[in-house]
Image (cartoon, rainbow, N blue to C red; front, side, top):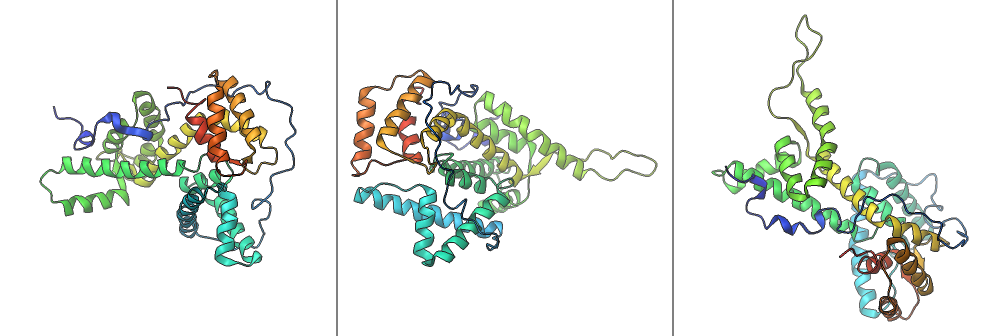
Length: 341
């Protein structure tokens, strides 16, 4: 019997990289905070979330995602420049102000567009994973680089689907395969196609969970496509052909699962960081960072050595300022106290 179509013409299944649940993710219950110092939380979080104006312009989802894309691209260049000039990084919220200030100049326009972005996040996050992820990055709840993991997932799923279609139609030209792929990604994918993709991307345990999440999609679409009941009967006849779901809905399930995985992985870090970050601006001092590493070390049972702290201090202080952002802190912690290897 031939191998599953989705596994052909691709690198080893072991090369899934960050597509599977992050290595250090564990399904543990939320940690106790009894060991944390009784440091006051400080003033409520200020900034763009509190400066929103009621009559801000309303952005469509496409407009919002265009703005988000521009922000990601601009911040990548800005971070590279900061690295070259040995300057401290900004959080995404800080950079949003920087970006809008450079683009519009007038404070009234900065607040107006900032409010439009915030209102767009609140409006579309429930239905759009890209918006949800950006909002979490803006609020310092997940690492800025997680968007790259989601982008990789999207690209891999699309490529796997292309391989599946190619192997299912070996005699078709590439142009015909491209057309089929376009039809799938803008329309429906079959259950078999979805299952092959999931089984390639995830290990057995995670694949089972994702497949369970996909079940309601197929059932919903099956019910919608069922022909109307014939005369004299009350129930609809089951639809013919394979079960299907919308490609966009399928992708949202995978992205949501990936997000859940990284939030589980970061749960202890985020809890400790937010407790130490008393003004909730996503930035802590070097002393705070040392305390963060020590707290994490105690909570995960992995020692934080003097060398770890010295390396971290050198990495931060080379920029000349004792300033550690949320994303910088999680990046370093992931390679030390949170690393399960």
